[in-house]
Amino acid sequence: MSDHHHHKETFITKYIFSQDHKMIAKQYLITGMFMGVIGVFMSMLFRLQLAYPDQSFSIIEAFLGKGGEGGQMTPDMYMGLVTIHGTIMVFFVLTAGLSGTFSNLLIPLQIGARDMASGFLNMISYWLFFLSSLIMFLSIFVHTGMASAGWTIYPPLSALPQAMSGSGLGMTLWLVSMAIFIASSLMGSLNYIVTVLNLRTKGMKMTRLPLTIWAFLVTAIIGVISFPVLLSAALLLIFDRSFGTSFYLSDIFIQGEVLHYKGGSPILFEHLFWFLGHPEVYIILLPALGITSEVISTNARKPIFGYRAMIGSIMAIAFLSTIVWGHHMFVTGMNPFLGSVFTFTTLLIAIPSAVKAFNYITTLWKGNLQLNPAMLFSIGMVSTFITGGLTGLILGDSALDINVHDTMFVVAHFHLVMGISALFGMFAGVYHWFPKMYGKMMNKDMGYLHFWITAISAYGVFFPMHFIGLAGLPRRYYSNSAFPMFEDLLHINKVITIFALIGGLAQLIFLANFFFSIGKGKKSVQNPWKGNTLEWTTPVEHMHGNWPGEIPEVHRWAYDYSKTDDHGDLWGGQDFTPQIVPIREGEEEF
Image (cartoon, rainbow, N blue to C red; front, side, top):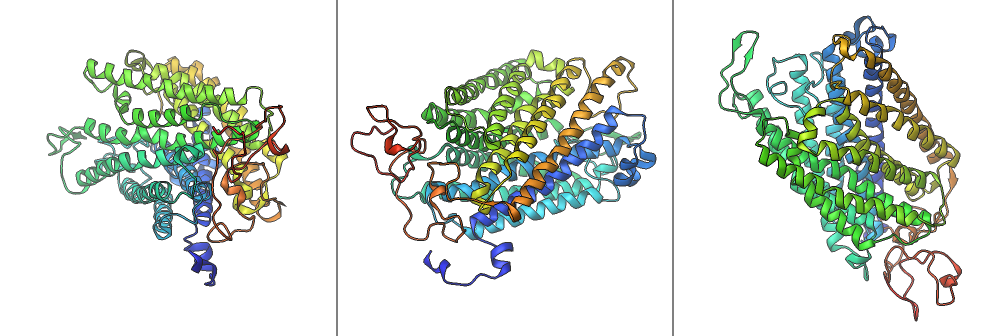
């Protein structure tokens, strides 16, 4: 790797086609943030439609053109916005913002490696992600309409180009974009796995790895197992759309015309989609949980409680998440015995999830809490993970799920447990590792403001949504005025929309803080949070290869905080002991 220090880098090799994992992490983060702005803006538009279905808004006409003529949204446009919002947030913001950004940034730095196993593969992975983001973004402007089958793109809407306006070119671009995204994810995941297994520095045993690295490693393994299944689902869908096959279609009638399709089943697509779709929840959540472990331990100035139990829970969640996909399909006419099997495996996930939640709470208990923005978002993440997870017990039970399936209750559940929790984990990671990325500090007061408005708004949106779901309000209906029994729920929808608009606008505080701090932020010291992990031993100024001399050797685990000797005094007079400090005489190693 020494040759990296000698050749001169040009602007293009340093900032665009970079093979340095730190630069690629920034590229993922900023691309994900751009896509996030689009995804959140879309949700603000369709929330306006839900709260004020009969009113005209000039902003709707300005941005949606034909789909919002006269300031009112068409049903097709509403469905398109819901579809692209879901796709962008799940795949292009949370998957890329967490795995793409933090796996790239932290894996080499925290395991003591000069870079990823393959810098070239890493670069290709990002540019495929960028290309898929670009195609998804451009599909919004297709003349016939963006993809409109929900983010789960169930056939026949997604399989018949003539089904509705959003089933045409917009849907084709969606499928092409996702195929490229999956290729990018697989390349990234394989790189992460090989790097963690093969490139750890001397002394960095698997049991000394920070929990962030365990989370990224297991996430990458789930991705390698489950993403190819979605690719096969998308390819078969392309065959049905373009080559006349019948994998997902049978006995279809459109406007009185009998189509030739025979023998296929849309339920096959559901099986293939959810075999990725459920692990995808944990592909998003596990990195956020790993980041939260690191941030909570560092800012509570305490060792993480139950380190091995946390690793076990990560592995148990990963295993169980791949065998529960059928709980998304309880209403498909599934054999009741099979439904009971999926119910059992789904409810089992509550055990490792509870282990994580209790371990976070126990780590916080009697800690010397440093309530900076990263810590607040981590505590917020534990809160939303618990509250969102509790409603999962209802949806995981086949007898109870049938009553609330496809209502706003489901939307409230998965936004809290997956969307908001993962977003909070991502914000915690950005605030915590911003000094490592840019050598500057973010503004703390703006961080506090961002947290409180975002947290209150998140609960303001999704807490009331559970109740309109229990009242039976279906999801994906652009207006409920056609159903007199739902008229009383309109005022709750207005409350939800007001909180959604406030929460969406609050993200401008974060964006302003982020970009202002890159240019004008206070210069960071080498170890601003007094952390133990290896990334804080590298110089503030970036260099390709991470460490100027030898890579440091590791002697202990990552969580030796507030360690005392036999007399109750702090070891070495400080409340943290970096991993590179040798074990002292008489000191017990965890």
